[in-house]
Image 1 (cartoon, rainbow, N blue to C red):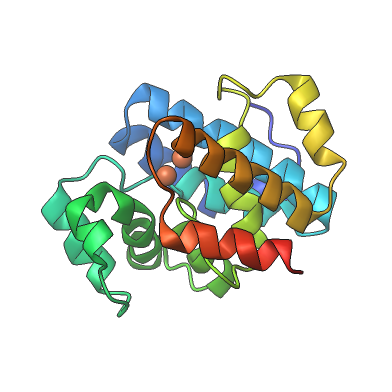
Image 2: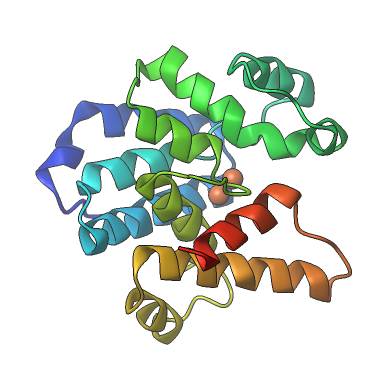
Length: 196
Ligand SMILES: [Fe+2]
Ligand SMILES: [Fe+2]
């Protein structure tokens, strides 16, 4: 995949890419690359350095395939409570675990990257702009079945809060259609975005 910005020649991206390639299944690695590409596009669209999109995108799922006990142990280190929902479904902690992993393994200290990776699955009230971008990119990267070019073009005409709310609402509706309820944090995040 051609990288489109000098920032990405930054060896950090290449190191994380190599780690992701080695530690993830082929399909998840490819999803991570498409998420990185989409997040970089969104960064350009909404005025952030695209290197932030590349790095958070390639790193967001690097802990998705580790055992549950390791995931919980890593996630705990961020000092936040592990909710009952997370204990019941430790896979939900893969973002928080990856946010610790990028600090340990790659020396990342950028708070926005850490916040974005930690909250990419469910979103969070007060999420930073990069977090909104990564949340959206993960759900609309071109490998997702609904994500046609037209679908993305339509979304790209919105503001950053608008696109985030649209994608979040779509997720909440999808879960409802399957008889499931979205996590409270996602519903609160949607409410916050609706009231901005
Ligand atoms: Fe994820
Ligand atoms: Fe993902």
